[in-house]
Length: 151
Image (cartoon, rainbow, N blue to C red; front, side, top):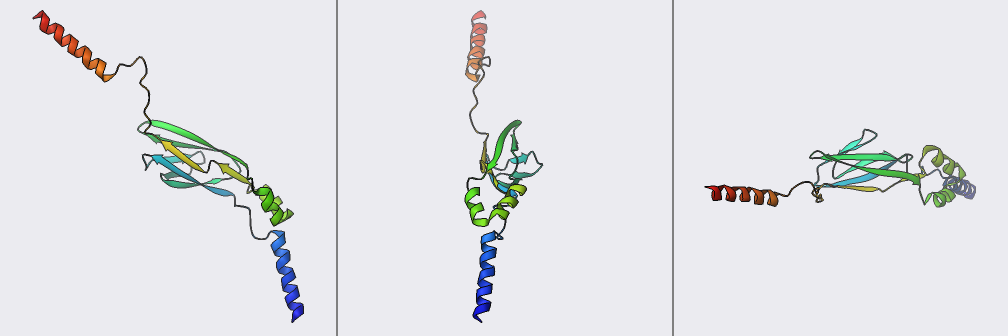
């Protein structure tokens, strides 16, 4: 009986040390997308889309560009990929074979930022060539006053 327990324990340790628990984080990463106002459709360069607030599942091994349009105005945000800072530690725990697997599949990468916000409520500056509504009303009042003085 003790020989069976010893064999089972040894097999368990071999599997645990070799990293058979799975990939580092998978080929995809969830990116939280929000906007102000909410309910805006966000489109990734991959063709994936969601409405805010929402989640996009994007591949870890490449950069992505997200687009959002509201009332004719389009904003874009770039998400960059890079080596996951925890990759080395997880690879030591998972074994060399698991580290090689993570590198080959792109699971060793992470996307940054992992949250994206589109804000369409920011006040935009009025171009210097444009007149404000107040100055236009003042000009109309001046013209009306001139007409009254002529009569």
